[in-house]
Length: 300
Image: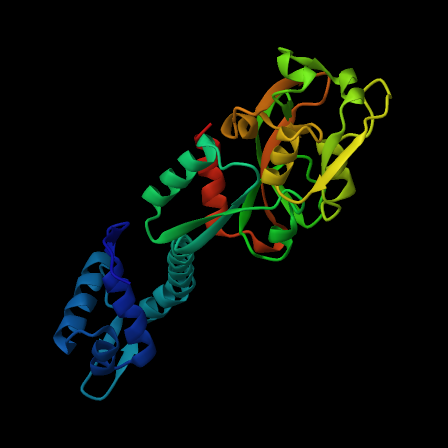
């Protein structure tokens, strides 16, 4: 471990002293440090000069520590071991930002996510980012199966094994309907009017609480909302909405991204806001995931 001065001392001198205290032999010390025997002597003399007293007694037959050398060794050894461990921990952390980071997303990887990906790649060029779409009908499966390291998903998230990090994009929900639907001409839609529109519903592979948030069964006033087609992907749902088979509730970023002429996206008032969250598995949190989470927060 090479380094500069610490408190007027050189790390190389301290390292040399520690190795010499183990070997009690200048030749073997030089071999371990990949330096000459004369360099070992030079480093020792420099350290003794800084301290102001002899640390090693050397004769033609033996090498031994002086009492002061023994005292220095007792205090230096644990401190030097802690220093090495601190440096190694930093190296391990740095290596954790290498490899591959797999990021999942639902609906669309919006501007905030893509800005975070670009910034992460620029800061950590040794870590490749793979971006994968998560099926609408299975929002958490890829995380539970270890297929992605982190994912941007629609809230809510109530999975005990998952960690919900940053929450963002809180906005009114939007109803996707056919451009021919009567709702298509509305500037906004009260939630009570959903009682007159079957809602496209995510497949049963999604948790029941999550499906209920994306396709509620009742209006806020308690009126039943008809069930529409069951879908596994976002594109299925939007296509069925375009065909007049029902309406589909979407978050605003997804609605903006998937604009098309045969579908109208109408804001809905009176429902809880939709929101996106960055999620990862509790047992698979890594330095890569933590670093990416920071970039998503900065991208806001």
